[in-house]
Length: 417
Image (cartoon, one colour):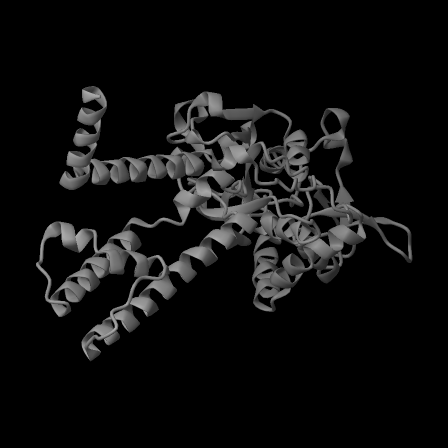
């Protein structure tokens, strides 16, 4: 092309295009997985980069949607940005697909379960049902071996089996058969496994409570405490109908941020009060950044997505004479793995250009101590159990006919005297 200019402009959105300075010439240049491809093409065809800075909007803020419009209006040759191709029928102003990625939400990691719910978490209904069946089986076999009368009360209130399952001592008969010894051995093993399992669960969960369940659907987002931060251009880009309404999410839950750069700034601050949409490519840099934090803040939810297959392409001018050459260049760069290489090194480039902080900006986690209020319902159940035991003990004493007759005789003697 003998140094012919290629008109372009960049949106300066990391990590796809980032401004830097050539260490040799001191000239301003751009790097990134979008800028690098255009730079290589310009070098390949012996052209020059003509940055159309006069197209910048107020305060110098450029948006990729505007770049696509300027390219469609023949104000640019190739935009140094990528845009989506959703539901488009005319591809005259877009190149061959350059990148395919998912467009999902980065969601704050769930909070840990409070201490007052730990005792309920370790209790699994299925495991309790299985233990109850094992208990009834052991109790029935012990009654059968000891040749005692079989009844529902004797099975459920078997003293030997109850104490054995709770790892408590019980009186063992001096003369017993081998079958009874074997049953007591099996009962000891079952009680040891049960108490060890629940003891280990309880100590581990009290030391570090497990997190609450992660959100899987938009309905979970609606029931959560988080707000969804969106940008108006993203809503239009995804072509949502019904006035940009997300499915199963109320309008009060969505906060529209008009300025895209303010939206990106809020997302980069890792504000855990919001849920942010992000591409899988951009999330890779956020994920690497979270490795520098003491505690990760967000996770990438592949279940809550706006688009699982988001196709991104370069905006290009109609009837561009070297369009086929540029699209062939895109395929060759991808074929040699340069696109994946640039994406993998995006975070390192952002660190080098100081676009990502090196320090931990997250708030330190507060170590919560176990208080009496966290155990109030356990202590209540313990007090209730003691009350039931005292009532049963009183009923056993009053139910004895001999003791009751002696008590009536003692009362009659008092009144007689």
